[in-house]
Image 1 (cartoon, rainbow, N blue to C red):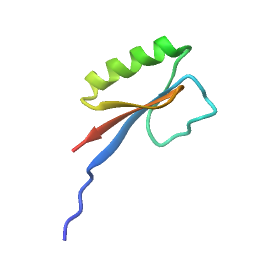
Image 2: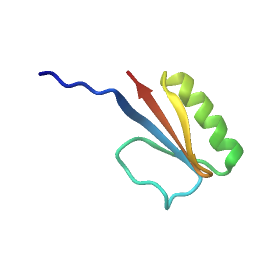
Image 3: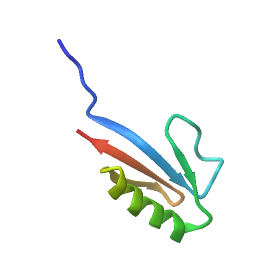
Length: 64
């Protein structure tokens, strides 16, 4: 039986350095507006989907 990935976290975007750790590329932003801009652009660049998981954290996820 073969297993395959169905979802992969491509990046994390945050304004709060204390909320995240390694494992995926992390982008630190200065404010909410910059964070939303990063999420929108990385979503397109990485061909993923931006998921807001809190007021200060977005994940860019690739769904297969």
